[in-house]
Length: 340
Image 1 (cartoon, one colour):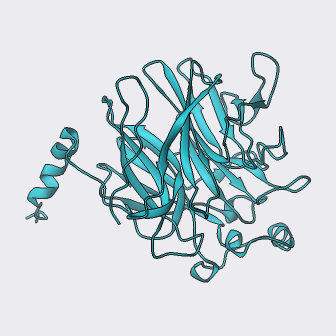
Image 2 (cartoon, rainbow, N blue to C red; image 1 turned 120 degrees about the vertical axis):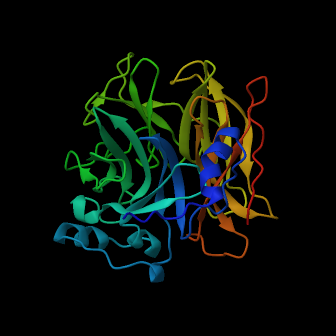
Image 3 (cartoon, rainbow, N blue to C red; image 1 turned 90 degrees about the vertical axis):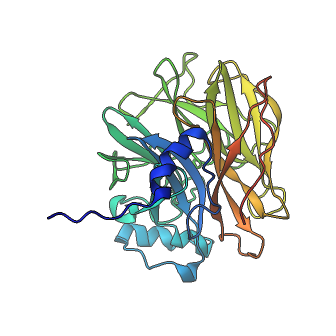
């Protein structure tokens, strides 16, 4: 005889409620300190790939090789960067209940990355899953930058694909961090990235192991909008490309998300306004976001990180999801933060 586990009425209703738009995420959506969430949809589930964000005392000791230990000996590294040596992921069918997938990538699988593994961006191509990530908080002449890892499943485990950074230098003044992979309607693959107030976009080869020149022959095209600091994201809706990014200081009250619109994935983009900012009744430091539409609908969500009101440590950030609304003219309304 087979014993069946009882199923609650709520569990049976959740898929129907989600389809009707009646389910609201509970913020913060998961426990723990995380930041820079990228939300995707793979294999019938929503996936969030965030940066691990925690104080040094909260983090386990990483496993490092000799080269990585030498990298970490560099003076001036923020202690919290030394704890950012791995990535977790989360998946959900309804944006409410999330499953944690531990250590989908860590320094044991990337020989050249020793710390500061940031802002993963995932994309499916060639029947596999590719994860772009920044590592080592590089400055001029240092080893590190944007790497790419590959896995057969969206939860990994991911392994380093090319054994070195895909982008390891400073081009147009942009630090190689905060990468975002985007597939345009014509199949072209782009990678948007950049810190230090500069935003570049590069073309990716179909195998995602190298860069291709743009049609004008350039490799690193700068498209920095006014006020840009970090954390770019692009979507296309009803023929319009929306470029979004974070402004202000990531630990300060002015951290926020702005957006621009343009006619192509490369722009030119015209700045439109701010769509996410802190709310002193809910949380501070809201930014570094991503957005997604529910399948077959024009119902949009924004995933982002924020700092609870009671927290003063810069790295104590949590993940949240709220509705993103477009007006009839295509403009984006300011996001109303919910939860605690």
